[in-house]
Length: 297
Image (cartoon, rainbow, N blue to C red; front, side, top):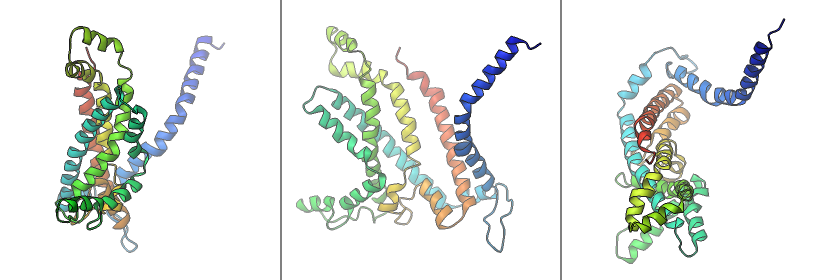
């Protein structure tokens, strides 16, 4: 005789797996399998028609650590992340605070701030190329009004990376502003009324009440900004292609160049694994230690 309890439990288990199966299939196809395949590829040598690839273990990782170009790219990406992440978050927060206030044409201001976000990165790169072009670019035209010399912003190692950073901040700040704006609108107005009754200034209310309540949003934005700092390369194809002299080369462009320009898939795979490991460790630290401080008590 079939136990009704066991039969019900079996149906519940099957039902649960059916609910999980779409997400599990998608994750397996687009996350788990590619990750395993990338790890496997990184353990083999570069193959050619005359010399097939061979298992070399961690040799590709050793080659990366001994390659000065790789360390230059890592340094570039650290500077890129160190500039774009805090700048994008601070500008996004300021724009959200401004756009959330009672100002004239508030809808227009919000739309203007968000407009760069809807542009594809390729389009944004072409737009800023018009700004940076020496001689007749907008920046040189403005500088010429004050007698300043022409500057090749994208053609000099000293300025190329910072010019790319400016494009990223301009593009990302409006996107992060939307999250801050949504979070600001969830803050109860009673808190502002209570602060006014207590005689708190606008700065005190913002610092003591608004910013602590925005900490969960800030953590979310921080993680996204960190991921974007190693995944946005579209504008590099238009602006610098990693030059001059690898001065603006970033990790993802370095991976793409090794995989599709030099056809060195094992080195590209090894670099990808290192990036994933670092991102995982940083995200784990953020959620382990910063998450405790994100909730206002």
